[in-house]
Length: 418
Image (cartoon, rainbow, N blue to C red; front, top):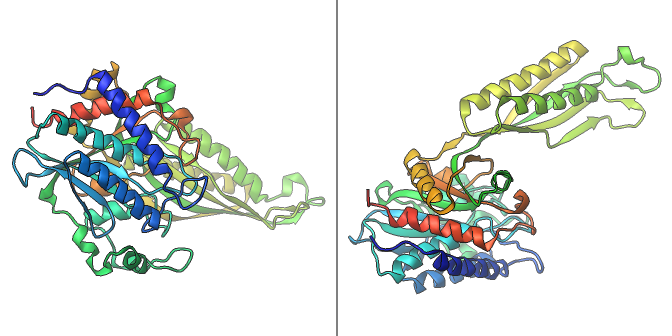
């Protein structure tokens, strides 16, 4: 087996990654900010630049029919199944420069190391820059990864952005054929697994004083619109003991949501992110409160149990206060478990480069959600400063990126050795 990446080589690779993150950050629709959305001129420029970087390390490059930029480094046997590496190149509005891009650029360094050693693996290695993970333009997430898994519903082509431009029209303006989106789908036999490096987007690694952690699962989520209905009344004339204050009931429930979820498990979270009190007058007792509930966790069963407990608590509060409670689920996505074998491979590599490993779930969505429907997936998290993401202050250190590249190279380069 060829020598793995040394610490000095990893630092040099990390410096390239940081510089390339800066170069991609300069490709933006908004001066002074980073905004790069699906099928935009900036999307095209980013694909061209990443494609050039792929070619310099011996990859065959193509853009698929939904706009993903793809590169292939052939294995020992031409046409062998590929180990797929990558992440996304699109951003939210006024984004940070590492979410998504870090995963694509660290993957390129893995291939660059193999190319420099003139080494071929039993499998091919492919790197993909997914076209749209965030869903910023059309409010549809995972467009790129669902393209290669064949999970594009027909009605997606008719979805429009804020300017009324449909996905189909945007594809044509980008130089792609809306009728050909199905050609992006990869056969299950084409790919043997998917590995993704991503910033954590949370504070757990920083709290543990670790650069890297292995992802166990991507959290499932349930989102609900909830309503407390009481009785509006004059703020000055209705005695406290005779009120049916919907806002007071909702406030009691919000505190209970926090306490019950905190006591359930450290990996399950619940958030009330939106609240509206009606009629909304300073001198009227609130008669109705509408609020959102977002619950997430890495296992569907315990997540469902938590949600049942939270809704039962709302019913109990309303029964005691003489109010009514209702809820309606408007969004659901199941948890995605990372493949046990790929977790083990990541853990071995992480222990080798940083001494120990931390296993943790992801609370955010990733392209791996779509790919897990077809192939084994594994993810590695890299510490980010204060857990800040989707914000210009998003930051990682070059030394942490160097460790990630070392772990990535070891995980990929030893593929087939067992």
